[in-house]
Image (cartoon, rainbow, N blue to C red; front, side, top):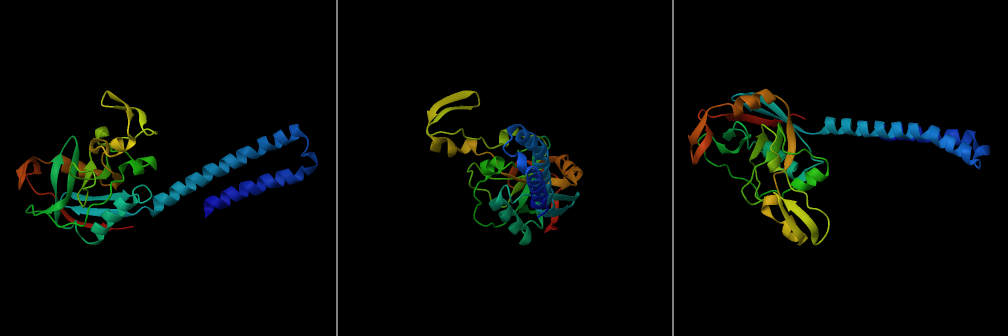
Length: 258
């Protein structure tokens, strides 16, 4: 891989410098000087390796194109952050589950949600729920629930997400998973202004209100279409008393393009 090649080059450069001055290895002042000369090369190699890794991930992250009645947009998903969630989502894409579904919940200052109902509000059958990966994704450097990110929709049960997803149309910090501090019991934990002392770890790890929502991708093109969707008039529709587009926003197709 290029990243390892860059690192190896810097390593060999350092070895070469050391070999050229082997007669001075026991001179500590010269050794420090050699180290100072070698460190910039090593630091540059590590930075290059990191950049190449990020580029590699960007070029291999799967992308899905949504063709809707309001236009097209593309999302990129991250199996390195939320592998089970991404696998679940992509399997629904491959199964054509999303084709013919609608965005059935649209809140202009919050999010747009779809992937579960057809245009007649018949709920489509799904596979078993996918395990919640919100905290794990954040720990791996994944996105929070900020504008343009893609997350799994669910009920009050954190382990209930199946096929429905939503796109954040603003930063929704309150949807983010809550990290649990180390320790068992946890010496001190603060949530919504209240402090909990010496709380059993399992109690916090399993508290439904602390799970948040798993972010597993983001819109990389066509965000203007999402903004069009969020701006449509809404009201009652099907089994829902509010937030349903008055004119159906149909997902004509969702297909893997990369």
